[in-house]
Image 1 (cartoon, rainbow, N blue to C red):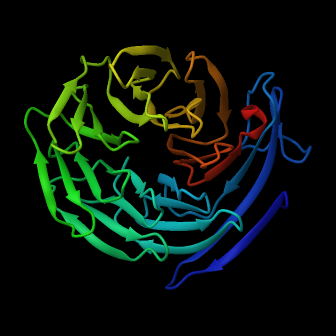
Image 2 (image 1 turned 120 degrees about the vertical axis):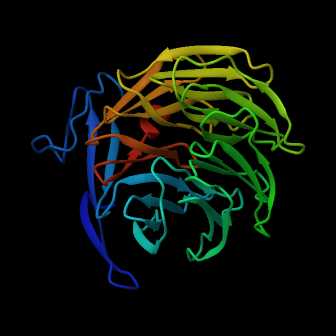
Length: 348
C-alpha cells in the first residue's frame, strides 16, 4: 500500500466520496509522517512501545458515530451523523456503497455473525439492511423514543434493542420483523446491550440514576440477575469471544467480571474524562477504550494493566472495532476521520 494516496469513488446520486489514506509510523516518543515534521493531526506519546502504524480514511461529511466489520474482515461499515451508512472494501479502501439512513447519536451498528445483515439504530426504529448492497429489508418499529443500542443474537435470528429514552428492551424476530417481547419493568435508561457468545443470555447496561448491569435469559427473557449500582454511567459493554469475561466502561473506569459467577476481576482507572465505548480483541487479550479526550487506551484483560495509548483524533472518539484477526483496530471520532491502527507489532 502506498504511504499517501487518494481515491475518488462516484456514488449513485449527488454524493461524491473521497478516501484519503495517510500512513504514519509511531515509534518511541513521537510520530512522524515519512520522516517529515510532525503531522498536526497525529501526535503520539507511545513511550518505549513497539511501532504502531496508522492510516486515515477521510472524506466523511459527518461525525463517525459507529463502526463494525464483517466477520470475514473484508468490509468496514461506517455510520455517520449526516445520516449515511457507508460500506468500505478494506483491502482496496474503496467505497462499495453509501446509503442514506437515520443514525442516532451514540448508537450501535451491529453485524450478524454470518455477515449478511446490518442493524442500525434509526430514530425510534431498528433498520435491518443487507450488507451486500445496503438495501433496507425491515424497519423494526415499536420504541417510542430513540433507540440507543442494538445487538444480534449469535445465530442472527434475534435482534435486541434498547432505548434510554423510553426505558424499554425489545426483542425482535429478525426475519419477520415481529416484536417478540417488550421488557419494561423497573428499568433505568438502558443504552447498552450485548449477547454472550453462546447465545444463552444478553446483558444490558444503564445510565442515569440506575447505573446497573442486568443479565437476561435469551430464551425465556427472564431477569437472571442485577449488578450492584455502579459508580458512573455504563457507557459500553463487551463480552470476550471465549465467553468468560464481561467488560464494561463505567464512567472513566474499565471493569471486568467473570461471566460465570459475576465476580469482579478488576477495576482500572482510564482517562481523566469519560470512556465513550469499548471493544474487545478477538483473542480475548485486550480491551480498547475510546474517550472524550480523543485518545484510545488499550488494557490487558488478564491483569488490567495499560498496554498502550493511541493519540491522533481531534475531539471525542466515539467508535471502535477490532478486525477479526485482532491485528487492526478501527476508530472513528468527531473529527470525521476513521483511523486504521496496525497493532501487529504489539500483538506479538
